Image (cartoon, rainbow, N blue to C red; front, side, top):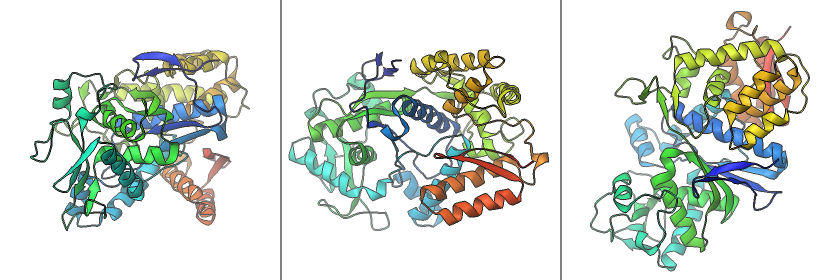
Length: 448
């Protein structure tokens, strides 16, 4: 069965054929770790986790490499760390740990590689040196900038008119810039700012060069799929294309570009000024949204009921509906052995991740093929829902169990087996039994 994906680069759905079927390569832009992630970021995590799972199903678990980065150097990080009076590493380590907990609670598998920007300065400098050498960049007043007019097909990803690109880029007027669209590759750091030594003096990278360096390091000069939110198409992804293609002399950076749609909350654009800015952490741990906290499984299913390329209206009603579906399904497949997913379910997912259609297929399986229902939910990353596993049944709330599991997954990833065993034993003492496979903890249930 052919996998068809919508490619932002070509503006059409096309059959996906990887460069190397034994090494399918996927990159998605990860978080800038200066604060809690909002639920729009959560949508991106869920979408590309489903894609990761589907690629593993299609090509084999060991033949897919998923890279999702951590941006741990950025002006927002600098400002927040200064505000708190701590080193940026203290802030970014704290926020990265919370991000890992949130991602695990949403049912996301750890990526194959999770590079941090601060560990890839050598690769960034190497790309910048290439761009300078081949005339696509210039140094001025301690800065290095990409020379946009040097790339005739700049704008091929976003396909926006020049005036729109200038407005969208929020162009900084600076005397050292040759052209209004030129963007920073490297900039000087003040003594009180984080900085790294470079051929152009002590400084730090621009935002866009970071992903070009990390994807090159871990996936190569050209790879299969690059993903992120629709808001990243311009300028971030456009500038990634410009840097990477100009540095290495290729027509493309990734063969397929995928972007998930915008998210609004209760019919309005999410904004702190409107008071409807909701973080993943708040949804999991507080009563800010709908007067209660929500399990990660509910958040995930609510997201997947809308096609990833469509805008989504995130509402309390949508969460209530998702929870009702999960409770109903849980009674059906809680202790059923799995069987292969139905062909119709796989066909739906293979049609550009058509999760609404896939979920409709799962509804049809409820009464006749509960094993296929369970395997379908596993492929969607929706963990087993035990209708009886409520806070009143256990000595620990469900959201705290998810936090323990996230910490255990992180320990296993770091090969800290003693810490992994300690967390398992601690949960066991509180009446929680974990279910593991080669990917880590897949579900849990109260000890009977």
